[in-house]
Image 1 (spheres, rainbow, N blue to C red):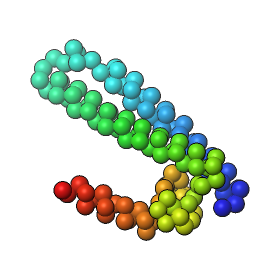
Image 2: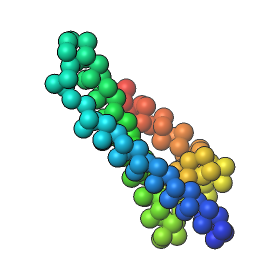
Image 3: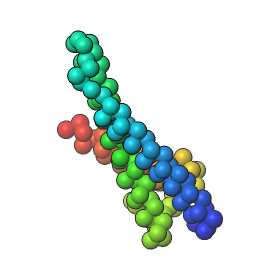
Image 4: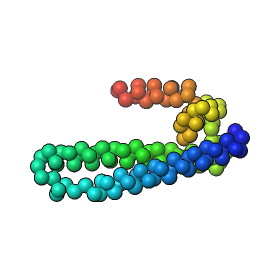
Length: 122
């Protein structure tokens, strides 16, 4: 991969990292702002609980993406960015443009997804 491509993806990852951190901070502030004592009845209480659960699920997902972004940035540092962790072939530029923190090429990603689905069914 050319240096200008690496720079492009580094900047893309850093921009997404900043956005995810902002999202996590906003979600955490929203969760802190929810006050169960403000619930006046069972419907209010249920609504607050559901809202809190949704916000927590979003925060977990965002934290996972943040980890993947940081991992991709580390791979840039050591010179292994853009290489599939399974087959060690280059990940296509199109895939990296869609998911710059991709660990696998599209073929290997399908294999990983099938294995994950297979293991969940047991």
